[in-house]
Image 1 (cartoon, rainbow, N blue to C red):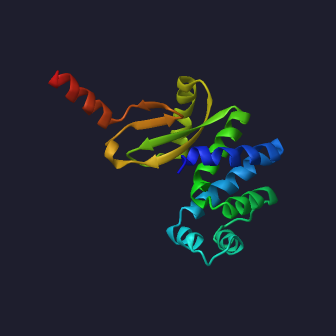
Image 2: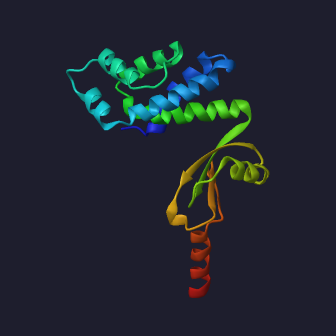
Length: 177
């Protein structure tokens, strides 16, 4: 089977080209929520059932969402389901988000922290991170207790690791050399 990224790209591109720029952010939010719904094992099992048709799966998926779907995203979901690509929906959402971010001049940043980071603390760190990565960042915080302390920031394929765990690994390498 082809890579999910390869399968997802045409869907994300088509939706991006079909939407006016003013609606792209809203569609990205809807797709993000839809991607979370699509990761549900029960929904995937239902979608894989040969007795369930695409319309039934569409109804179940949209009923599980907290917010409604706009017509473009609903149409995308119908096409994805008709083509049996429900598993690719999270990747479609990620690629669509990347297209929207590129259009807006921003990038997603995942900030891993050993402890919860408040909005004020995140706001204080963001200017330095934006300067380091030379772009405006949209940060999402993920708690990762194994870091012990500090943060690890992932932007695209770049990583900035200032965690205690990374420093301990560096010391271990230096001492064993």
